[in-house]
Length: 277
Image (cartoon, rainbow, N blue to C red; front, side):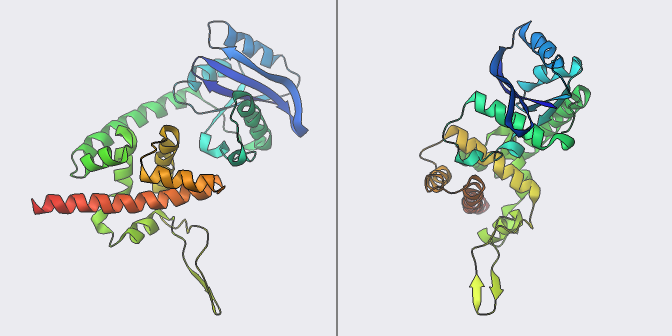
């Protein structure tokens, strides 16, 4: 079996073809998104001996034309969420990020998850995108009518999509009696464990709260990582933990905890000020 990892970016894609046990079928090479090169890629992949599956990350509008063309050519295409493969292959310890390494990683991920790779269906992708667009528009309209909307958008820099999404998942912060209560609601608290004479407080997060809020926080912190605002407290905390060698998930969840505490304090203070006017 052949697994094709495609690292898609604007205007080009990096391709790697792997077989089990690290066998390199085709060394990583680049394909430009021209009128002819993607079609030539499809012919090449269809000519390979054995079953072939293609794996790429969901990258908004970039992956869609490539996925559609390969699917239309009769290839098995799987579009996976980037979060699912982020830590695959010890990604958190990589010092250098290259398109070639990412393409190989995607190919190896596909081999390890061969039987469970979801098949890309263009019609479903189009319908889902339309539904999400309508939902996002409704969320933005509703969020804009809330009193805390200005402070959330200005202070946290989460954007017009993630901002309303975050507000929708948290709701009115005044329903939480403390910062700890909001953190617990998100399920990123570390509950104490008592055994005999020992109280253990350093444990994994509880994950008993809102999974949807945790996913949204993960996306928000991803924006922080990309933009790297050096004067922002959450990013400073995140960067410090990362420089200490903390694993990816550890410093991300610790940063989510700090983000929620700052969010609670800032939004609560803002709403209390409005109430006094």
